[in-house]
Length: 472
Image (cartoon, rainbow, N blue to C red; front, side):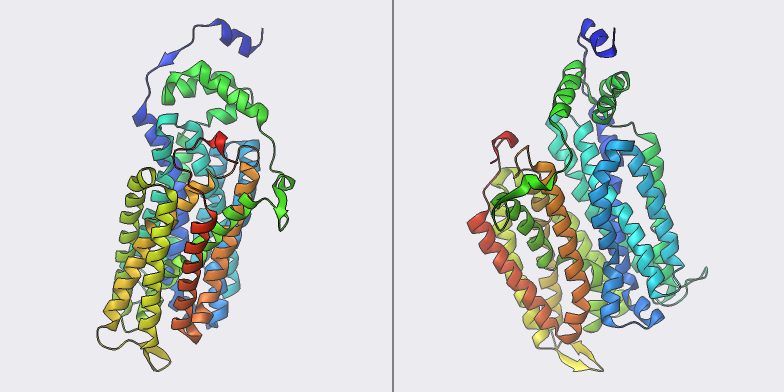
């Protein structure tokens, strides 16, 4: 008699839910989001030092800064198939190892090409971790906790951003500048990259401690192991859960792009909604603040230390606003949040564009007169608030909701790839745009925010309270 038949003959176990246990698993998996935020922001404090160290142009600098995003796109695309083949926790461990290697390699980079290569390698790990974390959380979490536990991924990302900027600030302060040596030896900017080794190590250790996803174990017909994990960490009617997983696996199939074909420029209309949500999320320029803010504030009169401290404060704003979004998204809905956020970004980005239009250029750098610098700083932080309480987490939530069951996996893959590419475009072009005119740069992002408002108002439907099976 095979395993499934034996299980059917036994009493159906109903065990208490273990919220504390599953919360630990979700936090452990969300460390992948922390790595995502840390890696994409740790370069903030290194920008000017890298430019000076390697004597590169603004265009080359922009490519180096955004190189990790290319690796992220590739890592995210292949993470799913690899996780289905080897397991979720093994992919987490692989990602931790690759990320640790990238951190050390970036710290010892000898020229811009080597730094670019190490950053791309790190991006592979980040892309994989950013996909596996929410997938693992969804598969291990009880249904009544899935939304809140899933939100830990976005919270981990913004905490990672804060931690990276704080470490940059501490190291630069200890050395007296990012390009100078710290007391224990080595340039501060190199230690900024090396610091990423620590969260990578933590992620690797946690990946060795947490159990494999029950969904993966059922797919591999390891029902006894899946049963034990569900009983220990999740609770509830374990046999029913295993039966539900087996039924869902019967309907699963690999990502197939032909499922997305439709009458709107070759794709289904809802796929374009997902793509444009992703693209607008990046084209409003949010990552410019987190990748280049230290360099930006120095260019308008702040000292290097003050610029990095300002970036840390901005990242704290981002954490607070993510908590606001988590509290509001199921109360007022997704679409209202997107509209409010887009309107706020139009105003704040427009304000920043105006402020920089009043700047005078001294020694090739813009300087803001009088209190205009303070206005620009306030506008930048309100802009982060407007994004963080709306387009930051809400787009990720909607991408998981707007597609029907048949096309969800493939449509999400396309939308996520579009998001990474859009992020790369903005990050790569900002140094060139800012070198020409900061007014143009922020004016362009304000225009995209206005277009995003119109797009959401006309093309995006509310998903609050709707079952996933009801999506068109």
